Length: 290
Image (cartoon, rainbow, N blue to C red; front, side, top):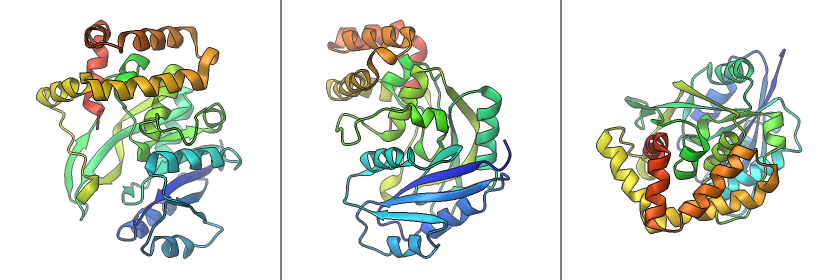
């Protein structure tokens, strides 16, 4: 595809410290197309909105809204994006740095695989962009895995127009745990995922956003136990019920069967254990629970 248009969806909240570095890395993408940003500010009280507007409306369309939190803010952006023509849509945080080939790599992977949804590994860095580690999702991208844990980190996500158009969600639902988890559920249910084990982003760790991911066996088991607890499994169950309500009979038959199996099994601890043991590859997904 010649000269593809990419729309970046950016939710901001008091992000003045690192925002310009993030924006400059977006506009420095080398992929042979055009890129613009649709930004929704989630009630900032610092200079975030002024920084966004300084780039000009031809590059960044800025909407200032009430504080919804990251999940609902990004879901709102995804809904708005359906009315804006582009070939590809990418999500962005406000404090990372994109490597110059990030978008080019995502488009290449989507085109070669025929998938509609792309996400990737992360290079974790500190505030000064000094390397910490690389994070890769340990499990697969099956629906069984994704009902338990999310493999997609939002700032790595890129989707094509068809995937966006078929995306369904109640924007203001409190049952959607995170926007990127909903995207990964949709992609896995429809077999439309391309996960890239290489990283094309510097994922900045600072203060409250420190993810503290542990890829060891002990870390996986620890998160597995947490996932099986009543409060965590109840949240996963509620999200799965919301997912079924959103897509209903339009889910592929195998996805519909897996979703029904999960909903039935998740109501009791023995059922949750049975589901995990019966879908052993899904245990790897527990390392993605954040």
